[in-house]
Image (cartoon, rainbow, N blue to C red; front, side):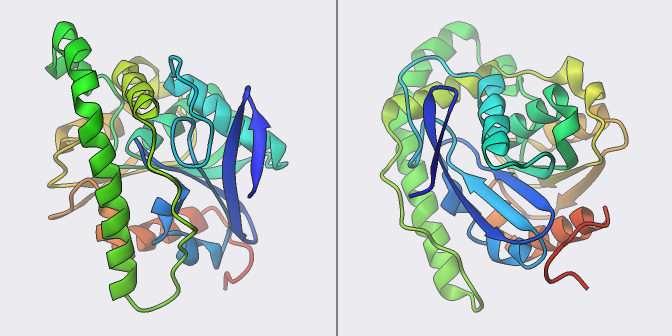
Amino acid sequence: MPIVHVNGIDLYYEQHGAGSDVLLIMGLGAHAGDWARQVPALARHFRVTVFDNRGCGRSSAPDEPYSIRQMADDAVALMDALDMARAHVVGSSMGGEIAQELAISYPERVDRLVLIATSAGGYWARIIPADRRAVGLPRIVPGLRELARQLRRRLQAVGARRAGPAWQPPAPPPPPAHGLRRQREATAAFDAHGRLSRISAPTLVIAGARDREVPLAAAEELARGIPGARLVVLRGAGHLMHYERADEVNRLLLDFLRASGGGGAGAP
């Protein structure tokens, strides 16, 4: 099992394909395999790296406070361990927050940036008072674990129905309750609104018009805050658009990432 030891924890990762580097960062409670609909398409043109964030999957899940900056540091440490000087960075949901932090704090490591179903943070903190957040976090963890199980079942069902190559690593154990709680606390505390102007990488924001987790207004706000960012809204798409609308998302990813002139193996 490919593991690197970084920042005091073990991180599970996989690499597929060859060419310019693409780093995919998944969201709350999800794992590397949840990129199953993207990896085959991207790996025809790039070297694709996927990994499990701290707190879930096959990576370590210490029961201590996490932060989005800390998870961005994990991602950069993984890049260092894999001799990856720069990469296109793609993040979904909480992974999009990690990707933003990586682009802000380590601009020299990011070629192009894609933010899917995410916001600049602070949204949950603004709509739920602090006292209710403190009480609510322990109560929502069982629901988050069930959501993670449902995501894996739905992803497998989509893969079974669709023709063509599919990448499905062995399913990791369910994320521990404390790992989900620590991730949720990290995303609840994240707020990049005042720092978005520091993102220098060409940026694509992909939003779902029917995303119930990240309202369209939050994605629009995110795109406005990043210099030169392009916003694409998928009609009828929800929060899990990366697999429910995989063909459209993959087409957007390939068009945007290959515009840099990269592409490596398989690129015309």
